[in-house]
Amino acid sequence: MKFHQTPLHGAHTIELEKRADERGFFARLYCQREFEIAGIPTPVVQINNSLTTKAGTLRGMHYQLPPAAETKVVRCVRGALYDVIIDLRPDSSTFAQWYGAELSAENRLMMYVPRGFAHGFLTLTEDVEVFYVVDAFYNPEAERGIRFNDPRFGVNWPSAPVEVSEKDRNWPEFNPAFHGIELLRGLR
Image (cartoon, rainbow, N blue to C red; front, side, top):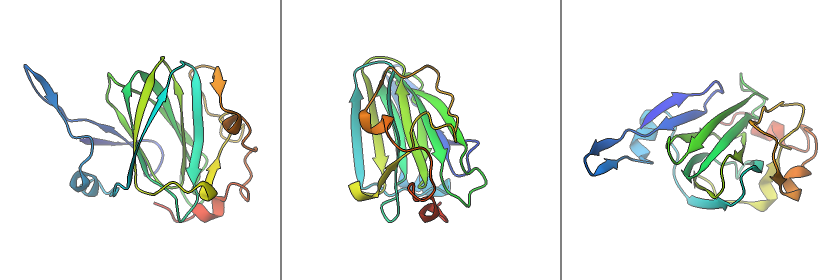
């Protein structure tokens, strides 16, 4: 795996290192040792799978507060999506900044999302399937979200979403107290 630092402190894209021959290729999607060498250990406790059937569907921007804050490694295995992360750690040099990258079944790029980041995506094709490797168990009481079009962050989506869940459409405008931002201090 090749780890590429994004403009946001601690977040990476991960490129697969393929070993190919006439039959195809082999590549690791996750290796605890390689993640540790890259300085981003991520013990896996859960692997999630989502399918979104309609192009233009937006999911996010979700995160969990400590002690349930989670690190994610996200990979699109069918179709294509625009993956977005927002740094919500108040002591980070990239606080309140966002980064986006296209993840697709064809480019096989993965996004490493550290604790304290909101995460979401916009599907670019129909039938988008995504796997998430996660290092913390889901806790509904710790769940928070940033509205995808919150002016505080100014995310530049590649197109206007055509479908957004009621929950994701109705997250309140950014408010450090509601969003638990102080609880994200010191996360790495």
